[in-house]
Length: 217
Length: 196
Length: 207
Image (cartoon, each protein chain N blue to C red):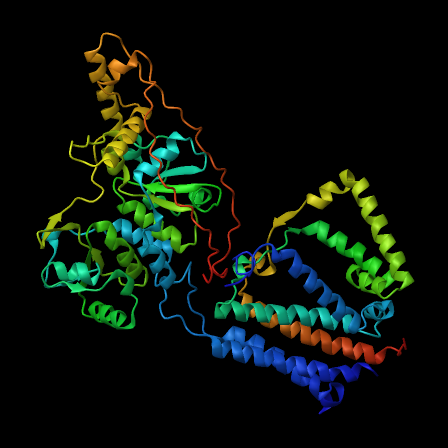
C-alpha cells in the first residue's frame, strides 16, 4: 500500500493507540455522575453527633460576640418573621439549594449554625449540604424550642440538685438577661447596678481538628 | 480524589515545591528532545521540522484523553480543574505577536530559558528582549488595558462554549492531530532538507 | 537521521501509557452504592414527604425498622420492628433486604429514640433511590424497662421568644414603680455575603 511507504509502521501503531483510546472515550457506557461525596462517607458523617452545637455553647459565643458565627434559620419565612434567634439569616429549607444562598453555605470563613424549631429540618439541610461537601456547618441541638427552654426560660434547679446545676442555671439566667428577659429579683439588685458577677460557666468548646477531607469524589 | 491540591490530598504548602519539580522535569525533557535549538523551533515555520507541532499537539491530545479517562474512573473531576480565563481579542493579538517573536528568534519563552541554561548567547539576547517587551507593556499598560481586559469570556473551554460533547470533541481533536501529523510530514518530505 | 533512534523511546512510552490505562481500568471498582437522585430532587422529596404519624402507620404495607443500636433494641422495641443500626444500613445483606422490600412495594418505616435520629438513615436510603422510606414521628423512652412510645409533632412551634421577653419585662415593670427599659441587645451587624455569580458548568463537570 502507498501509505506503508509514507508512514513508518511504528507511527501507524502510535496513531492507532491514540485513535483507540479516544474512540474508547466516546464508546464507554456513560452513567450518571455521583454528585457529592460517596454514600458511605455521607453515612459516617451523618451518624456522628459532631455536627451538633449545644444551646449553651451558642449562647456563650453570642455573648462573647464571636464574629465567626453565622446563624441560618431553615424554617419558612412566616415563622422566621414571627420569632427567630437574633442576627440570623433565613434560608427556607425548600430553597436551600438556590444559587443565591450558595455563598452562605459553601464557604469557609464562618461557622454556620443551622437551626429550626427542633433539629429535624436543620438536620435534613445539614445532610444535603454535607453531601455537597460544604464545610463548617453545624446544627443547633434541639433548635429554637430547646433554646427557649434552656436559655430564654431556664428552669430553676431544686435544692437537692448538684452544684453544677446551679452554676449552669446562673449562666443561663445571665444569658437570658443578655437576650432581654427580665426577672423580678433583678429589681432589688438593679439599684447598685448589676455588679453581681455571675460565675461564667466555661463551656469547653471543642477545638475541631481540621482534617482535609480525603477521598470524596 | 483529584485535583490533588485543591482537594487536600497533598497539603497546600507543597504547591510550589511540586511546581519546581515539575518545572525541572519539563525543562529537562525540552532540552533532551533538542528544543533548545532555535533552528528546530523555527523549522515549523520553514517546513523542514515539525517536531514542535507534533510534541505539543500530542501532549494536548494525550493529556485530554488521560484526563477524561481519569474523570470517568473517578480519580479526578474535570469540573474542578482550573481553567484560564479567556480574553478573546487579547489572546488573538497576543498570540500573533508571540508568533512573530517565535519565528524571528526561534524560541518560545520556555525553550529560551532551557537554552540560557545550556549557555546559548542568542537565547540570552532573547530573554533581554522579553524583558524589554514586559517593560513596554507595563509602561503603556493604560494604552493596552481595553484590549487586555476586553472581550472577556470567563473561564471557559471550547467544550463549554459550543456545548459539544467533550468525548466526541476529544475524538475529533485526536483525528485532527493525526491528520496534521500526516500532512506536515508530507510537507517536510517535500521541503529541502536542512541540516542543523 | 538521529530522530529515528528516539522512536524506540516513543514506543516504550506508548507501551507504558497503555499499561497505565489497563492498570487503571483493572483497579477501578464500580462503587457499591450510587445515588439515584441528585440533591435538588432529594430536597424536593424530603419537603414533600413529612414523617408519618403513629396512627397512620399500617403494618400490612410497611416494615418497621429500629435504627437504634442492638442494646437499646433488646431493652425494648415497638412490636414487629426489625433492628438495623443506622451505621449498618449500607451493608450488603441490608441492601438486598431493602431492595426486596422496594420490589414488594412495602414501605420502610424507620424510627429511633427521636425523629431526628432516624434522619441520617432515611435520607441516605432516600438518595440511594428507596423512595419508600419514611420516618415514624415518635419519641421512645425507657421507663422501668418498658418502652414508652409517644407520638410527637415534628417542628412543633414552641413558645414565641419575643413575646416571652416582652411579657417578662411587663411583669417586672408592673411590680416596680421605676420603669426599667429593656437593655437593647448589642447585635453584631448582620452579615451579608455578596452573591458571587458562579460559573455555570454543564452537567459534564464532575462532582
